[in-house]
Image (cartoon, rainbow, N blue to C red; front, side, top):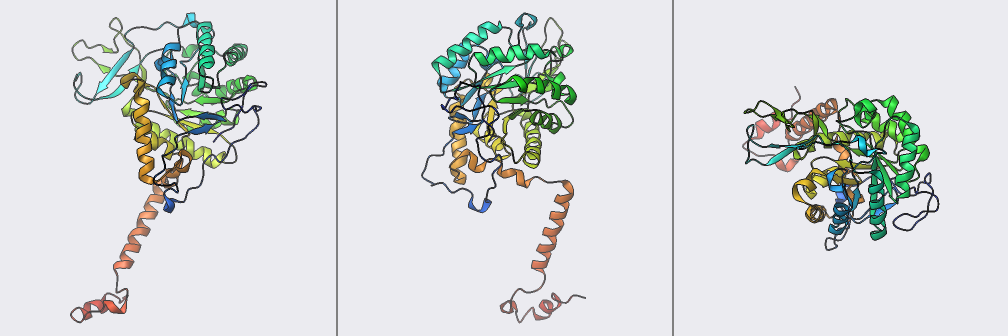
Length: 423
């Protein structure tokens, strides 16, 4: 679990006042004895609640920043349906600079190019951050917290390379009552020339500086959202944690070109016959996301095991079993964005039911009981070779010769004798 921090004079959603630099939670990556599988009662209902950065959520499922958190109406719907937390669509000080286009999405289906019948496995977007006035979004944050004081609302923010602008944005968003901040260091398209989004997340020196600005001002927990469009994702994650962030969220979308329409010869999504590379998400990115999150979790366990940080897994989650995989490699929470766009806000009920099914199967009574369990089974290729050679040798040793005097037979006596000769 991670540290819990709120501004002076405020309380968490669970009513515990604390200072931002005070760590109050337990182990980040607990050791689990696998032979026990789980110690909860097989008849007890699995408990999906989680406590992350001092914030209590009824379940680990979080609305990821994007269209599902774009205004009061949809965020209210998310809370009503039972999502554990909501991350609003990313805001900045000046929304007038944000101009979206339509269409801005394209889908990839299983099957040949242009197939209209196959299952949707990929989703590309060229959508920018919120184009709504900041004041409008802040008023809606306040209304949501007034109506749902015990639910977790997280503000996603992104700003230009300007310390004062970052400080102003943080102050205003915190005043609206959000419980935490997620910093968008990872949007793969739009406004890189203004040093926004992935332009920061891909430059560790720039990231360290901006994280410093953010964490000297923020008084609520800060999550840094990572871009997968980088060679080693552990590097920016490490910089973010060392610079004061309390959590890591990964991954944002993968830079992509969805495809070319073989009839028109134009790229998708086509806007007046033209397009631009965008962010790729949905089911097809799930294995990539698992790999990136696993790398971050291993780094956090090795280098920050004495600190209390959180990890939020993102990428291709459409079932509770997808979510279980993220938790097994160390995630505290699991974010869903494209899945909501495809299946609706009611998806959370299916996610919870399936995650409980998984927990019952293994007799796990809580999320923390199995979080990070599978990390111990990842190693290097060299170690895989060593382990396999050792296993083969052991199997050969078992097959060679007789294990007991009772195994001797009269018919095979000579062969049995030969089986135990060493030369």
